[in-house]
Image 1 (spheres, rainbow, N blue to C red):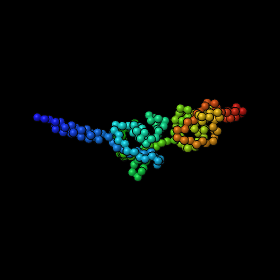
Image 2: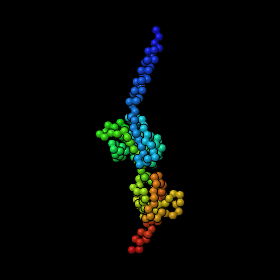
Image 3: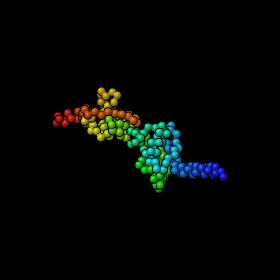
Length: 193
């Protein structure tokens, strides 16, 4: 007796069951870059145990955006997009997609917020404004402006004027040097008292 048809049927049934399990073990989501109409939203299939950090990284790659300072510890944020295009608070990137979808207000729509991340020496910070003075930038980087001066890394000869706002761009790199040029006037005035 030939068992070939039964083996074929069994393997087809097993394949169908594997497909069903695989289909049930992925979640379809939609991700877009917030405030950038030039990026088309993408649909992704993610595993339920994927962390939101993994979702953010995968989505950024598919949307052709670079996470800053890097994909492992991004300052950029993942946010849920809810009914009436309401954008939620930044999500906890350690949470899995399955855990997120079990919350009281789940969504399958997400947005990547590309923040105004700047680097001062090796310190990455989110700039609160597109124009800031070097003093404010040093303070943001937890460096005392009286002891440091701020420079563009390419032409580090003259410090940037301490009270003149400079226009910042995402990924901007600045160099802080401990030379006290900004604080020189304040120190001299203090000594002359």
